[in-house]
Length: 605
Ligand SMILES: Nc1ncnc2c1ncn2[C@@H]1O[C@H](COP(=O)(O)OP(=O)(O)OP(=O)(O)O)[C@@H](O)[C@H]1O
Ligand SMILES: [Mg+2]
Image (cartoon, rainbow, N blue to C red):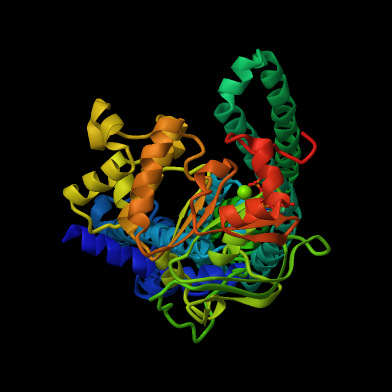
């Protein structure tokens, strides 16, 4: 039951919606399902801002009462209303701020989850070429950075910019109520201050972004060095590695200082502007009081409001600086991950129906990079149930041939058909469900052996899993492990040997039982005795499947129905082992050079 539901979850994630490619629309998209919570937050933040502004107003009421009667008998009686107002404001402020805190707790982790989920689902659909050009570690880092930054950007707007704007507007309005001159003075200051802060923050953003990029570069270098620790030890290069990292750490210090010095300049502006406002307002208010234009209470309120404005203004500059840093982070993540997918299902893609397993290459042109073609109008038909061996020197295009069948890459022109259906018109999921691959260097999940084998068929029970393991000759070594099928295999399967890893890969493909089977040097890491056993089991498991097997050891494919000899992207010979030997051509030369062992790396050796 639980297995089925986790399977359903996976499928839902795979159907990733397209994401906005620009930063702000992306953030808005992430926030879409939180409209109600955000509205609540705006209300609570408004309440909190309003209560904090009203405090100077209550102080004014106290001061006015004080000015009227220099000495009283009963403090409570004389100041009852303003004191009640003050107490009410204090309580309201606590309630509003904690209510807003509660909304943040409810929404924050969910928002982060949503952003990560969206980005991960989008990432899944990228092509093998994309992943070949990116570091897995840095992609994972990007996802969590971006999710965190979307949260921070949202909080900046809801919990900082919004209440600060309210404080500014209401304070200035109250000051206008006291005296037009005072209102104009503080209002002008606020406008100028916000404009300059904003400008400074945008100028600071490139520094902050470069600093962030340096940090993530240094992070990447450290990860690379740590994962190659064994190499460093084997070559006695521990000192070298420390020196190597030192350069990057030094760059990080330089970039950090550059950013912080710039921020320091911003702070100089901030403190100077705040001092000007403080003395300006107090001086101006005193002068007005002296001239009889305002009362003592007004004076106290003006001072209180000014201090409030200064406090918020200082906060605002810091928030601006952070805000642009977060926006930069989101932009970075969106740029890296939300790129157009290279290989997408056609809009009307159908599910691939494989009954016989006939594979046809029709005039296929393919190049990894423009100007360096691997295949030029390649034509070949592999009949249903045929077992075909691919041979040829390293770099002749064998792996590329199977990569095209798996649609890891798309031909520049021509078609690849399976049972008459163009694979470019089929969904990738149904294609991959019906073609199995055992790669040369299979990698495993850092999960239990059982989970790794069951990956071939999530519904498989223990008997089926064990049977597959026996067929792949893996049962014995698994049973000998301390925790048997529950043993963890380490990152990418590092804790089992290369040959054991290959046998797990064989087992999970046997469990998958797809009608088309591709082996790219599938048994190359095995000793000849183990290889022979697996080969026999594989032959039995192949049954009526269409099989394509790449091998450097010709003996492992000599018994197959048909052999294709590749040379620089062309199929130069095609026939059974005996036919090809009789031709006394390319294959014959390879076979004689090999004496039953390995193919040399090139014709010269
Ligand atoms: N990801 C790639 N990007 C660019 N060029 C590539 C890529 N993969 C392979 N090539 C090039 O394509 C050509 C065919 O490579 P391919 O991997 O298909 O050879 P192969 O026959 O499988 O060799 P081997 O026996 O060494 O596995 C080679 O010249 C290779 O350098
Ligand atoms: Mg290869």
